[in-house]
Image (cartoon, rainbow, N blue to C red; front, side, top):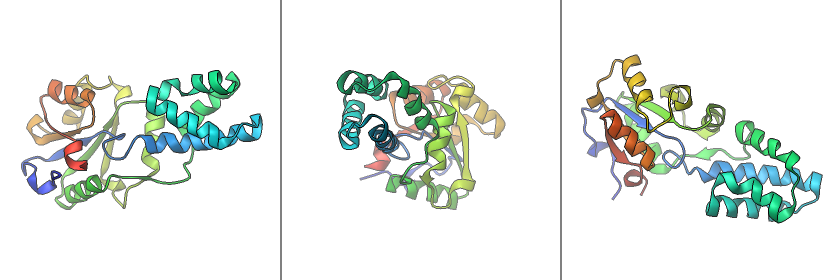
Length: 205
């Protein structure tokens, strides 16, 4: 059974979340960008948008995001000149569909707000891209209750610097925080910071 808000230590005053694969499936962002980019290529290079999208998604799942464009070049002969267009889309594109929170995460966020406690989003990655994701999530009215930290502005997780900054700026103690972790990087950050954590998988499942 998933962990619910009522099972979390009531002494916790604030909760720390990553974005991708914690609050929503990270792939949902990339899949939509790939769809948009493939349709752009269909008009300029006459490649099948469906075939290009499928190849990009398959490469993302098997090899990771960094390998996607190289695969387009090698498998479909896509020109290098379009690489910058994909990179710009990843930073700024308006998605066809809103990014949807995991249902159990939405419930947890709503319970935190109802209990008048604090939500922090502490996210690795390019700030411009992460902000673009945040803007396109269906938050169900939770936006005013979110405080965001982009770790690239200090040191990326697992370094604890951003947690130290957060604690200082919001006058919190380490015992007040609970991190919802989505990766080994998050776990290492929580441990280095001396704060408690729960894997997101225990809430999502």
